[in-house]
Length: 184
Image 1 (cartoon, helix red, strand yellow):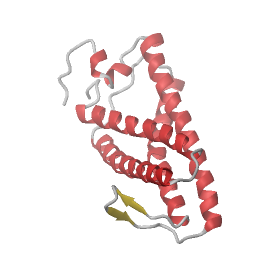
Image 2: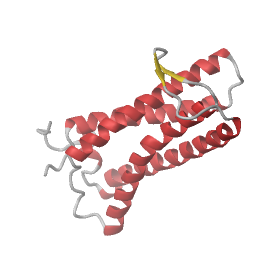
Image 3: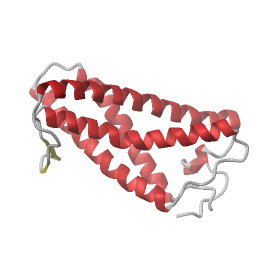
């Protein structure tokens, strides 16, 4: 098994990372905006990114199942290995739960998502204000949990690079690699 991620895995990682971080920040910004046509347009964009994350995360998960990640360094303690595995499992879970909770909220609120303004996404629930209120709160808390997981993941990667001085971060950032990459 290779000590590096495949090029496809690296590209999918960074696309999903950029979309998730950007959409989390955009979502936090949107919450406090006063109701206006611009806010409604921005919420459409936020939902489009969520749908995109859902789709790319599905591709990423299938890729990971077909091409398992490289082994972790032997120098890692057992609790670090366990923490890494749990964190990655939770990240993948939240890649799907976060957009799904937004989709459920939007459905219960009676606001259909039309992907890129062209493709109607079917509602998962009928309109129900009480349920929509609960799902809105759930979506917010799920986003906070995803934010915490992302921060934890980034902190761990930086710890591996700057404190442990191992190759964990370099496996995802080709420019940090000490040797040429021959994997695809």
